[in-house]
Amino acid sequence: MNDNQQIVCFGETLWDVFPDSQKPGGAPLNVAVHLRRFGFNPIMISSVGKDDLGNGLLDFMKNKGIKTEFIQLDKRHPTGVVNVKIAAGGDATYDIVFPSAWDYIEMPNKLGSSGFILVFGSLGSRNINSRKTLLKLLEGAGTALFDVNFRAPHYTRKLIEELLEKSDIIKLNEDEIEIIGEWLGIESGSIETICEQLTVKFKLNQIIVTLGSKGAMVYKDGKSFRHLGFKVYVVDTVGSGDSFLASYLAHFLKGSPVDDCLDMACATGAYVATQNGAVPEYKMSDLHQIKNKN
Image 1: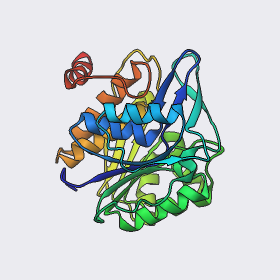
Image 2 (image 1 turned 135 degrees about the vertical axis):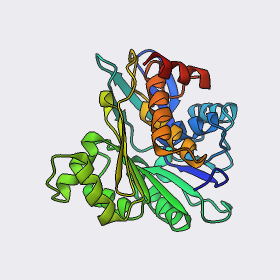
Image 3 (image 1 turned 60 degrees about the horizontal axis):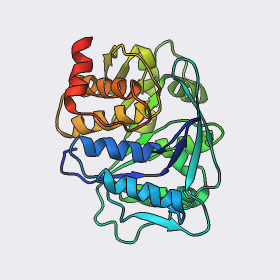
Image 4 (image 1 turned 45 degrees about the vertical axis):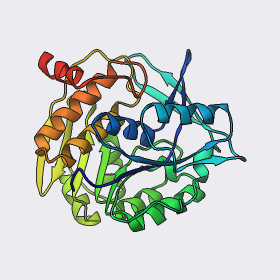
């Protein structure tokens, strides 16, 4: 992998509706925006309704420097909306409205050459229409990065295992990897053992696991890399994992060692958790300040 490869982010683009505001969101879009911050120029493949919310998302993407040529306009289905509730401590719960325009993404005609890095999640496959498009895109991808991101009730074991089979790198949290381990009958007292067996079963190159307040880890080439994370005052966790993933991928593509990739990813995720919304403005100096305080 190198920083000249085209990155394609596929899936949901939507509005996160909070009790007192609404903000653009959707994990693939969040990842794309953060990748742009790190100097990359990702392509976003999604669909929005032909409505005011859709126009707002298109304006947002243009303002953030995200290409919109592969954002489809859906006359039949509305722009996606997620109703977000923030609990004490900053953890978020989500009511993801169905159906939405991003459930009906069609295969783009002029994507260009194969061999791109495809970043996708399980939520974008909850409906058969977008799922078929994703499976076609996976056929042309050089590297498939699967952000597992369980959102009940929008996934099944069959779907997750099908996508794992087609993935090269996966990112998930501690609960998600334990659930998958249980599905596969992996008896283990450690995440490393689950990672080892998942790597073999699904022929994975890397497994990235976020561990909440305990930091994060990466399993690669039979080795485990851990980072304890950074202590911050959490405002909300919306988009923190997406920023973590974008930061990790950006630094990995630039050739940084895994330990350094984890360090910057944890700093990015920690900073975003101190802010409102998924894609707050920040400078690289803000991330280094997080690191310097710990």
